[in-house]
Length: 111
DNA sequence: TTAGTGACTGTAG
DNA sequence: GCTACAGCCACTA
Image (cartoon, rainbow, N blue to C red; front, side):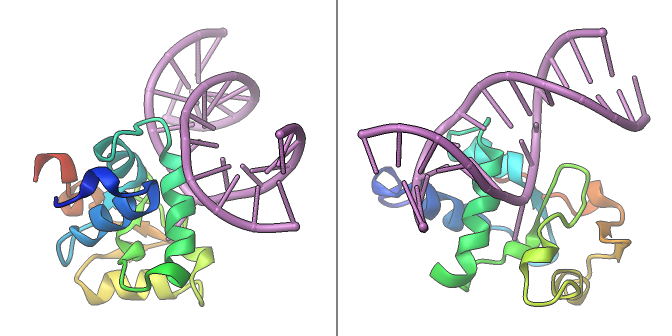
């Protein structure tokens, strides 16, 4: 919202991710689309990688790829951290993948 | 300044 | 349905 025009790519990503409601997940592509870079989904993941250091309050575990796969889990302290965080919010994770992915999917652009 | 890197996605075969 | 390839852009060395 406010002063979004002066925000950097990073900050836009972080603000969008922080809007994801408890118990929901979204995709890199959706975030990229919302901040005006629909073809730069890779950048979103990269920004989230850095988010642990720059802004730890970003719920990066709620961001997965379009298949519902926890592609970023390897970048957490432990590879189980991402799945555990999601399950603690009521999101079922099986084989590093969100079960009923569409059920938990949240579209930032529609919110 | 330049080149390499990266937690992805869409399109074509 | 799956696989392979190209594009995208900010940051680091």
